Image (cartoon, rainbow over all chains, first blue to last red; front, side):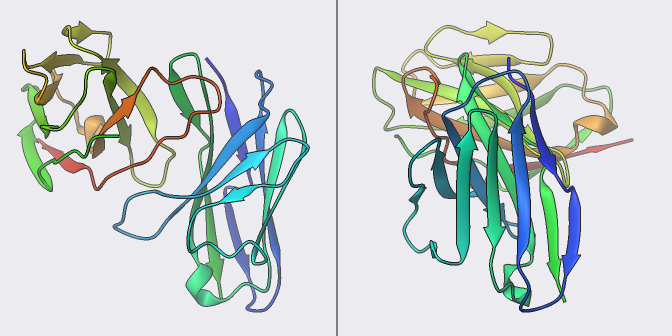
Length: 113
Length: 113
């Protein structure tokens, strides 16, 4: 299987600032990673597909200029929430797929105050 | 991918079997049934998947009806740590590298002592 690690697990930031979340595939070279967002009491919603060496693919309704994705290496994808606002407070989760299943990071709880 | 329908929530007594149903009446021949669970504030965890035969692993059993229109995930001896949201997902083909996973609403399973 694959081990996926996210950092940080929790972050609190002020409104208007940017926050970067890292997703690392520790034992698996991943040219594709996925980013999800989950609001309280709701299911996971796929935000975007991160592609190593090329532009990310965003799901309908997700602002690409607000959620910047960089996938510069085979083991690291980053999601930057730019000019964060309280409505961006959510649980962000990354994933890689393969070997017959999907593997998820532990998630990052973002709180914008 | 075929749509799935799951009950919103279920309760189960600790030590008893938890049987979680999933309806996927429009499933097609090449679509697999996957089950994941998400414990509060963690990333989802793979449980099991199957195509048409019943499957069992160390975590659970998956029973798929002969017509494949529904399935049941069985946790044989539920513990308090099994309290989570359980997602039944139907997708074409086995999860390969780069395939994305789309989540529905899931079933909240509460295991009670």
